[in-house]
Length: 217
Image: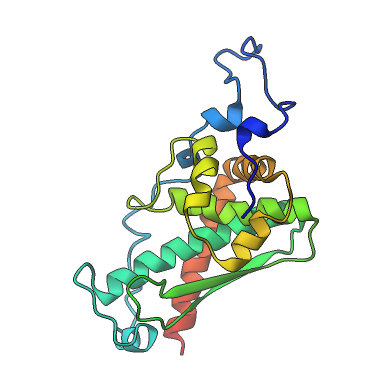
């Protein structure tokens, strides 16, 4: 995946250190914490609906065995990771196309290293740059999603180390859809920070809808 290093990008978006705003960073997107995009998941977020029949776990995670976590723990963890990932894609896509939406579904993959919950973001056609912004939003959400996840200290470090991590073929294609990938990454970060309430709300909606769909079968 061809990624342009921040040091090679044009610097027209950089602000001088003597900005009028007290304490303004020289390069705002580098100085802002990736974690600031998100919010703290509450105990309620991790709860499983009371009506959730545990017998469904066998169909959602067939033959799953792991010494690290139970079948239900893995499902809840994977569910939130996928919800945050797809919600981030959707919130950024809605910045350009309000009709964008997402849905989650059980993958029925029993491999402990694979996710038991998949997702898809649906959106109208976008320009290459906007598609690139939308694609970077998912990995940004991965970096802030859970305590055991990749907690990046700033966006520049996240971007520089992105090549060391693997993503879905769809995400990788989108992240490389425009030559100004660094600018797209910063844009996605700004949108998620500005719309973090919508990001939180839609993530929870996706989780709620997943439980509803699984238990209604």
